[in-house]
Length: 385
Image (cartoon, rainbow, N blue to C red; front, side, top):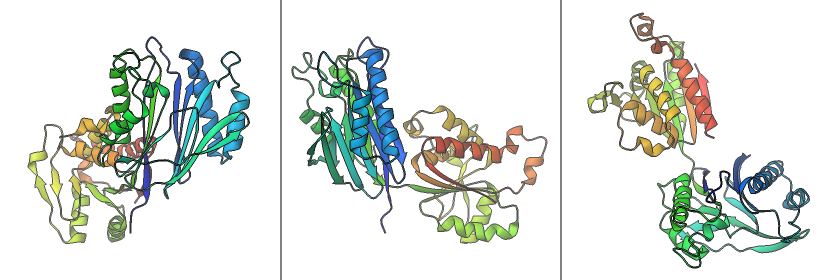
């Protein structure tokens, strides 16, 4: 049976040269069993454009989250943001992208560049239908997405990059489409693709962007699951039940702590070995056990993992690191849905007054990690035994 789909999102932008605020606005939110992305480009640049674009994304997002039909959303936007009386054009454009976990995609665009839809690494045509709502002409499209598909929406600053400079007519839609086909692959993140596109536009503008430039990316892929267990249950008679539950869950299996490893080694009938090559001055070595994807030391490693999650900005910063805390942080960052088993039995060793004070903070550190991961948009299930 195939895993459920996950909609990974990424976004990046750069201001018009000389401006502090971006005149584009990008909003991403979870809606029930899917994700909603709204990109708006405010008229002009600077503070006024920023306010108009932000208003557009916030209004559209709130109304779409409440399940209002597109007609009502557009009517509200039209009433709230009237046309410029001088130029006779809308104060802000928008693209709405709604993707469900079953693969259904709804797209609506008003005066923004067409969205890029990539299937199996290649641009696939979207069949748009025009709809007039009030005085606005909207392009709509419905499509079914599968794992491996990408949806990329851009403001016109991306399309116009290089115009009158490195590229006489700008970096047009077709050129961006060809470039995207070289950038999307299984292991690259949505955020990385968004940043690459914006960086490329900045280069074409020769580091003096002539317009606000924003990119929003949705990557459709299988959902990544993980189960993490640390500490034995308070009641020893619950060991077997918790172990059974741990192994019944899908995805990667990660454990921390010698007692925890011992319980699961007994359950599996396997041995635990220590990998001294992963030891550092600060982090104890990891272990190896058949049936478990990562085995680390307990409290000390978890506390350092919390420190890592607090300070890094991108998972790429952990590339090549083999210590237990870095590997544990990477597991947490890669997974979309993490089931945490937190055992509350007191380890007598941690009562030793000669040990560092941090050894008594296992529960607090694990719950802090859970809270931080939730803030990143991950689905966290915490069981305390």
